[in-house]
Image (tube, rainbow, N blue to C red; front, side, top):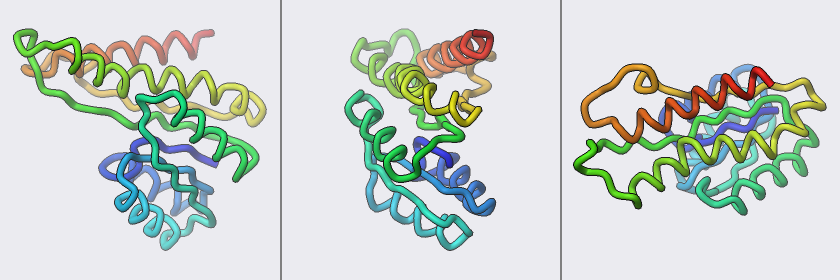
Amino acid sequence: MYIDTGSSRGIGAAIAEVFAKQGALLSITGRNKDKLSEVAKKCKENGSKQVLETVADLTKEEDMNKLMEETIKTFGKLDVLVNNAGMLHSASVEDYTGESFDKILAINLKAPIYLTKIAKPHLVLTKGNIVNMSSVSATRPFEGSLMYGITKSGLNYFTKTTAAS
């Protein structure tokens, strides 16, 4: 049983479809209901026996709590949490605003930390796993990716520190 965040398009949709081909039970989430439903349909066509769709804004703790509660209520357990949802914001230091940094920080770093916190008790029971999706931008600077790279570097640090404890 997998939770995959940012499932309504891109890498998140591809991850869900790969899990579906393995016959996995899926809990997928995204902000766009229609796109999320399209991914759920593809997952069912590709072998997933059950797909829970949760429209959620991962900048809000109440939405993340809802995602976890609905997943556990529906499936009774959690085996894998894939923290895939992310936001690329092209900006240099000259383009910096507190508002834009808060938004990318909330999606790329705060959400995976909070979801890990609330998933951990369930994953301990199943000896499950967490996959945090990072980026080469975490280790190599790219023009215009200052804030994105900072959040992905933080995610890498969080992942290593959490794994070591």
